[in-house]
Amino acid sequence: MKKYKIVGLIVIAVVFIAACRSAPKVSSVEGVYSATLPAASSPGRKVTLTLNKDQTAKMESDYMNGKPIIVEAGSWEFAPDKSIIVNLMMQYEGTIREVIVFVKNGDMLNSTQHDQNLYGTEGLKLNKIK
Image 1 (spheres, rainbow, N blue to C red):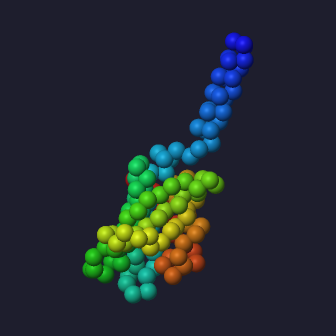
Image 2 (image 1 turned 60 degrees about the vertical axis):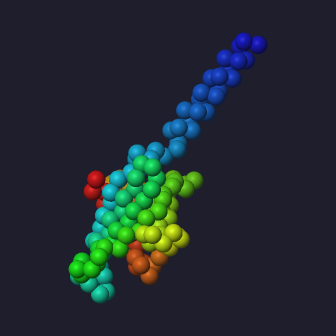
């Protein structure tokens, strides 16, 4: 009987270790990412995405035209395939305005799903700056 308990504990430990290794870690993604994109009505658009440890997110879009920066806030989570789903809403609005899905390649986030009206067919390619 004691032998079965020890074997059971070993199996549980192995499963736990495997699960921890396969699950992405928040710390592997948290940080500030940025890119400068073309814009039709201004010299360009600087997009900055902040992914926080508590899984909150903030995206700032500066059209570099002297007008206030557009701020969206929301949350982020890992999808089962380890991609990163970012849900954003206009600051103080309270309803989800857009969902962007990213894959992480080194220090870069590349969008795989995004609003083409906002980010074009190429999407967002954000480099980690912090």
